[in-house]
Length: 183
Image (cartoon, rainbow, N blue to C red; front, side):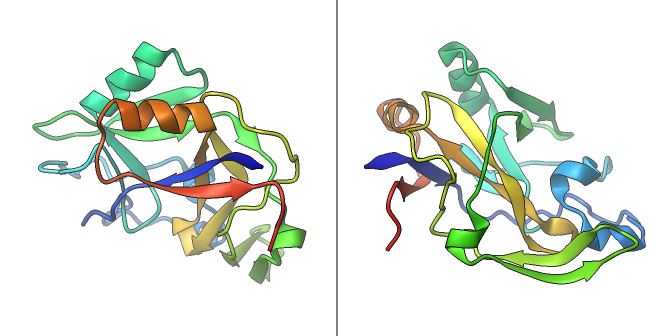
């Protein structure tokens, strides 16, 4: 049975941390906990409705934001970014538990002082602890994946949400099936 989909957009040539000096413990953290972007960045000419920066942030355009608001999706926050066009850092408050044990996710380089890992590897395919379909809406994993400060959660949507996004005509958005049984 399909539980939902991981949702991805193309990489774009931005680094949200820019030239910020984040401190030693930042490399053991993630984009959600750090909750900071370089305010000097100017965003322009992003060709996609949903995309990802090199350091793990999900960016959406005005049309995608409006779509989400019209659908009434709860738990979404849109942090407006600087620039001549309207772009937003998509933040999702709806959290689902990722099954790191079944997925054999690797946790590398734990730092006791900073209480975090340098790297968390093994996000796809997505394994969820709860084997029930996701509701219509947006969710994120409780774990953030990647390396150093650029670790980020996997964004997820329900089956009905995927259908609505496709029906709205959004292009260049990829969906990866989440199933209730693992290979």
